[in-house]
Length: 342
Ligand code: Q9C
Ligand code: ZN
Image (cartoon, rainbow, N blue to C red; front, side, top):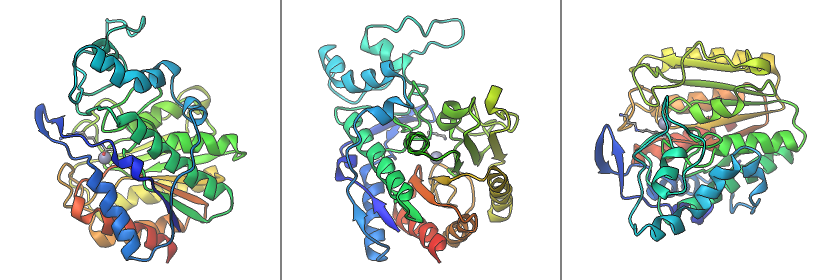
């Protein structure tokens, strides 16, 4: 299958993040994408294409206009306020405070449009996030055009970003943007299966009231793990979306036997939904040696994952999400994709 990737995605190059309440070296770094790209070339997996430019319109189908304007104007506002380094939010409109009116000052805007302090922003962040979304959109166009599958090597990732907030290293919801684009291109139903270790809170929130996009996620139980405030089993959708959101929270420590039982349950739900396209939010952080995660998938389990996804028999767009065991990312990614193609 073809891979879509732009070197422009590397321009977001954070130094630090706030993790577990402390300032630490950033883990969502350009090397993640470079290692995956190198392994794809080494494995002779197929062509690597540069994304096409889709402009702002497909982003605005999913994201709030004020949020996109904030991302676009962030660096000029930040430097006008006399700042120059990477930015972290530090005040939020939580219960009892007001998210509307939107503040004018950049410090207020950072809090209004984020949900965690773990996600650094810099001068090139929005350009890199746009390039990442263009990779997802180009992959969607390949699948819509008849390719059995495509791999969008998205970085920065997307699944924690909702319509009007960033966080969890995510700024634009690449999988959600691709899903909406596919709907607009004529797909009646799209399923998004999120296998990242962390719950895809942003994707869930975007499609929560809709029955045309089925969202499913296998992830660490939010009682015990980030993002803590979404991803429980009882979140099943609202209104027209009731029954079209499916969470499989698992206790930390889950191995392939436990994890793949949830995977199979999700695939059964997808079969009943009968989508035109499947999007896989491919987080590689369920890996046993991932530095920030506590599931126990082995390198061979990723091959098994690809093979099981292939059995759904659907046109499939893989969109990279998390995964931080940098040396193993390439192997686990290519194992999934070749497992699918075998
Ligand atoms: N000990 C993605 O995988 N830090 N984002 C959690 C918990 C944030 C992960 C620290 C993790 C965000 C795309
Ligand atoms: Zn993750």
